[in-house]
Length: 161
Picture 1 (spheres, rainbow, N blue to C red):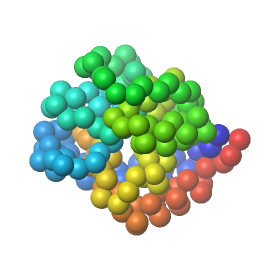
Picture 2 (picture 1 turned 90 degrees about the vertical axis):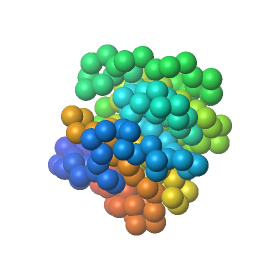
Picture 3 (picture 1 turned 180 degrees about the vertical axis):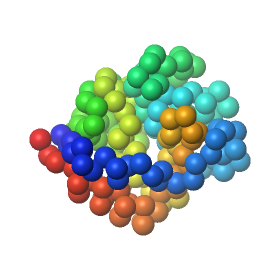
C-alpha cells in the first residue's frame, strides 16, 4: 500500500487539468472519447447526462457526507478497500481490471480521491479523467506523457507500507 506523507499533500492542491464550475461545460468535449470519473458527484452527473464512463470510482460519500444515489448501472461492479490518504494494491488491481471490463464501477470502502494518480498511468494518451474539486467544480484532465511524468513524480513521494 502506498501512503501520502502529510508534508507532500500540498502537491495535490493544484488540479491536473482545467477546472469547470459546471459539468455541462465539458459535455461537448466528451463526445466519442474514452473517459473515466473519480468521485460520486462527477460520476452521477455523467450518468444524468446519459454519458457512460469507461471506469467510475466512487466511495458513496461527498465531502464526508452521504452522497446522492447513482442511477442504475449495468456494467461490471468491483468492490475494494482503500484507506484515506492511500493507494491500496487492491485499488490499483481493480483499476486495471475495470479498464479491461468497461464499463465498470469501482465502489471503494474508504476513500477514492487518490485513484486519479494510478488512472493517469493506466489510461492511453488523450483519454480523459473527470474528478471533482470540492466547492469549485469538475476537473477535465487529458492524459498525456507530461501528465504521466507529473503523476509519477507525485507518486514517488508516497511511502510503501
